[in-house]
Length: 227
Image 1 (spheres, rainbow, N blue to C red):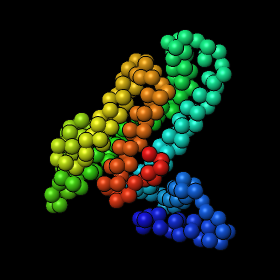
Image 2: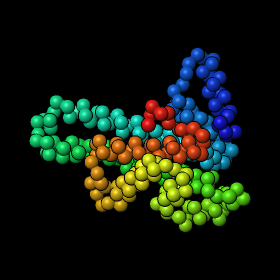
Image 3: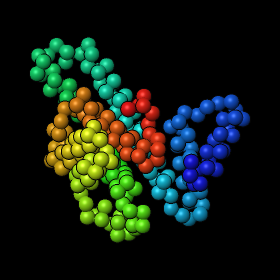
């Protein structure tokens, strides 16, 4: 718990004790975010970077939950409909089309935010794990890791230096490739199948962020059950 968040976490704990309730973890995060934002506005300051990151992570968590809900809702809509009577190939096309229409905004937002976060964390892990202490975090070091090094090179370096394992390396590369397809293709909805396949890649993004977060913070942002 950082000094920035300590007063707000303490207040939340007091509320729980006073009223005998327990706030869900995601609600606690939102309450802390709101408190920090109000404090920063009162002081005329920017929200600390640590809180900006927390806000992005909780936002990704909400998008992820929305996507899971939409997959479930989509399957319920299809079940018992005329789509199930189509031939296999036509059925697959119809299901994919519905999924693209129903999910594509959340999908695009998730891939953009998650990839940005993976790149930020990759830079921080490289800085912590491979840079000598005297040069760690300096302007020149961070400029090199950020502006002079592409994300494929960062991933390659993390893997070849033994900082990350093969599973994380593969997941980061796969997620990045699909993100690039989504962003750069004229019709990003044609990047891949928009139901089972896309959620597999979403899970890879969640896994990658979680593992990098663990390397930096000593704990995972999302529980094992949520991976």
